[in-house]
Length: 467
Image 1: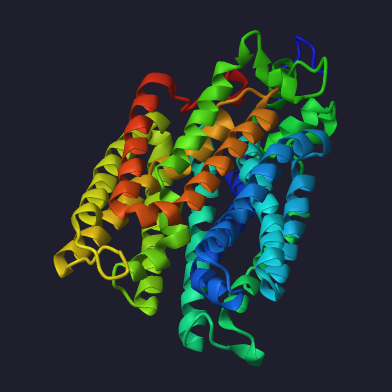
Image 2: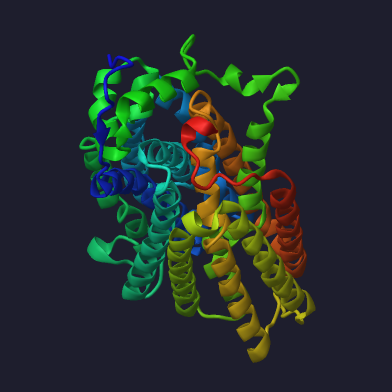
């Protein structure tokens, strides 16, 4: 123990070390993106292979999201009890099992089960990656490192969609046989096996979160990690963490409840989390190939459009990484909400005013099709530099040390439930009319703007112990 007369030992943080820790944690985000987007290229094939109706296909697409809600809910409790790294290892195992099982499914029912298992892994990754990254990052880098989670997610989406395109075009279609006579859509799911293994190996190589270790009274183990990752006066930092955790009891869900219900900060976290989904972003990534085919594009062109859209998402996430610690979280959210409101409104207008073909789908003219494509990609641009990455940054840092794991679990669970609701209802809304569907997403974007203006506080540059 350091006495009052002793000079504190000042350590210099190693940025390369912190970047390595954040990158490994963000591999969970890569699998998160890959697992949720890989279904895109297989949607049509599932209905044919399993003689499934549109409701069953919609449920197959969104079944993983129910698992994600469960995984997110329990991940925080598991992480608070057994550690962040062990939670990553469990998630890696579930990703691997789901990837293998989804490719060997023999009915729509067991396909849903394998996707449900993958969803549990996705939900756990959605909680543990931002928590771990926030807990190992110095304040001045936390926004950029936290944005790695979203960069990993959108990169996973891109790789999934690109591999879908390569596999489907190589075989001729998602239904056609590829290697060993196995249909192409099954290979789409098996391409997730290598990154799942890599995630598990990476998790075995990184140390436990120092803030978790201090919360468990393992300060000796936390000291060298804090010295390399955070730097500064480590002894003082440990005292701050210990004081902020209030270790009179272990973290638990009841810590989130005040005298009149959930703590206000938890409600704000839930609001940010849910609004990220209600603007309809995952309709683009789950159903875009079906959507573009419905308005007149070929299967190959529709898959290629999804690849271009995912590249747009990656580029704009890089923009967020560059500016989130400079401009702050709140300004980026506000700009993103305004941009999404305008672009979604444009899509709602184009789809709503287009004449219908014999199948009841909007028949876009050349100019209307171009406007829709531009609006969809600019919408992804607006989401990509704002609500995509900044939501995960905020969720990783806005809660204090004592409630972070549990609060993140509740917020992420609410997000996956919202995701499930949006994804499950889109096929029905599409039948009602794409103009109506995108009108609802436009309304959600408008609500998100006022939510941020009125309720979200800036967290840029603040230490976690100040939250």
